[in-house]
Length: 316
Image 1 (cartoon, rainbow, N blue to C red):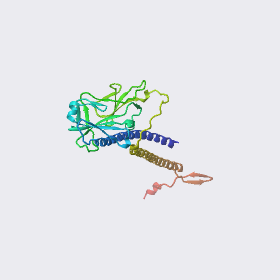
Image 2: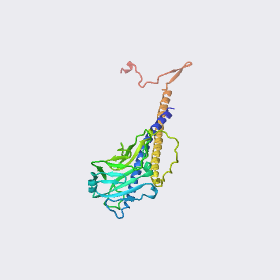
Image 3: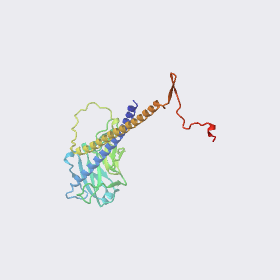
Image 4: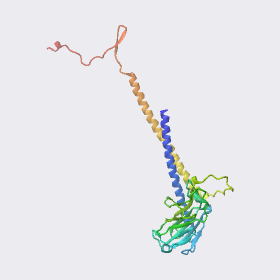
């Protein structure tokens, strides 16, 4: 019973460890999937620059297996962006005073509208989305054939960049809508809305308006059937990576359980064997020589090592 008790405690501790590892791996997998999408869309949107003109936005075409995602690109001079900004670029309003780091002569502002893929690439448990996720990322424009470019850092040094969402689901009664910003470093930041459909930011990233799911009261049956779920053919490889990570974690935990159990059982076996040996010696005791006196056996001492001698025997 004591062995079973110790084994159950060990399983509980390993279960807690597995839960934390799985949560961390899942979060890491989501960020990795979103970053892979950014790199893929940068490649596809740069293809729209056939005969590029500075200051003119170009709509790109997302991969066929990501139907519903909209992308665009706008090439600008860094100096012009800082002096004049961009009044309207899709849903974004960029004021003057935007600083580009590191400095490049020309940059490309890449626009994302993730549509029905929003919650897949940017999951936010416990929240409901009222808008699609919109993204604004900056890249170097020196080579318009380049892929896997690192993002530049753009910072609004005066007024914030505004995001005017054109499609917003009304917030349920009693729920408070907020802006959520996903940074390219995996950070998450919540802000109050500037107005009913406008968010603001000082940096690039992905943005969405959300409400806390716990604030939404249960509603009756929907009046219309929900639309079809988006096709996620393009996510097969990403799902495969996630399941490989999960499988690795599960296998590691199972191996750890068996290893810990084996060590524990070996320790118990050695301990029990030692106790049994000690008990056997205790039961055996020390053998005592006996002799028969009449009808009784009585103990007798063994012969002494030195025989006694009489004093007169010592006289020469």
